[in-house]
Amino acid sequence: MRLQLIGIGRTKAGAERELTARYLERAGQAGRAIGFPSVELREIEESRARRGDERKAQEGKAIRALLQPASLIVAFDEHGRSIDSEGFADCLGQARDSGKAMMHFLIGGADGLEPALTESAAFVFAFGKMTWPHQLVRIMAAEQIYRAMTILGHHPYHRA
Image (cartoon, rainbow, N blue to C red; front, side, top):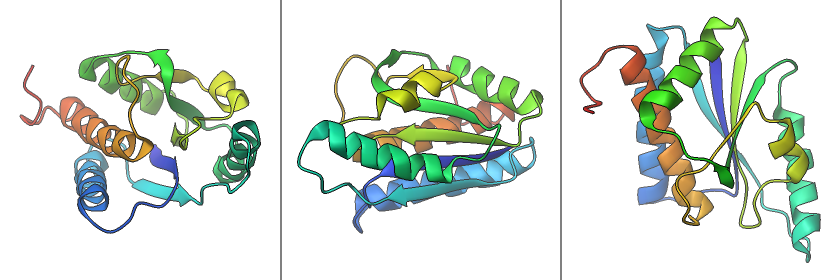
């Protein structure tokens, strides 16, 4: 199963970009042996529309253009449910075992995701009840994807 992290906004050079890249590279390396041949990041330009609902609609259209047919969608949204790392790893393992070819992880921009995207997602997860900048959510999602690969691969990175 291929994994694709889709985020609104381009991460500028620096620590945020480096951390995201590091975790996704590690996830790709760890995932190959356990049925996840690739992990990639796709960044979408932020909408310049004046109103939040217009921005979400434009960004949602751009996200939908990247979604593969019959793929599994996971949305990260502040109104999603919290899940622990083992549960997240189980989610990825079950998705892989379902035979789907692609899993997309969606991170909205400053206004969040278009409601139609969260409604169509198989899973909607939150990183707790706090609101996080979407650039930090990208890092946390990349780290959790890597952590899930290590849990599924019985690597000692995750210590519960």
